[in-house]
Image (cartoon, rainbow, N blue to C red; front, side, top):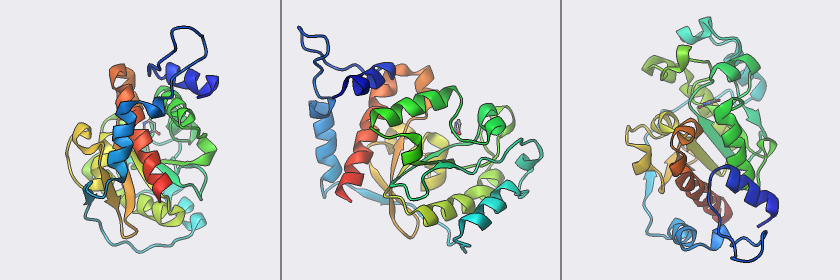
Length: 244
Ligand code: URA
């Protein structure tokens, strides 16, 4: 593990083991029993794969039309107060797709997902995996900011669902990481707790894209003791990408 990688994990509040003597010698987190168990179960054929029901969608399957559709969207009330609709950021040919809930105040101002406080932790989590923002695709379930950062309403989720389906169809990611409760519920069509949904491989859409659920960085900022689980979720996702 590089010193930089160690620093990221440290910044995320994930404890790494050090030799008693030697400042930089850090035990490989990947070789820890916890992570090895996790990875072994990830490739185990007995692991249940959970397939969510989904709607059929007519796709324009073209980025220009899709982006124009999102930035000019007025399908729900959220368009009235937005500064920017936030389409997404990163590589359109990414293996990894991260899906959050909805833009917050910073994202609404800047037109980019995960750029506020939660975004800073999100970036550290990506970096700890050896990924940068431009290597992955990052978007949200809902493309416009709900006022006061309230949960999106059902009709707002429904209005936006097609946009994400189209983004997934265009990008064809090898893994979707559902970041937080709203993303997980919306992608998987259930209302189970993140603690129940994480650690399993779910599937999304006709393409049966693997989905892994993890905690939202805003939650991790309030509950830093859960960061280790989020790290395990990312390693689980990486084991799926590596096996695909
Ligand atoms: N929270 C989210 O879920 N998405 C963002 O883009 C920012 C904060």
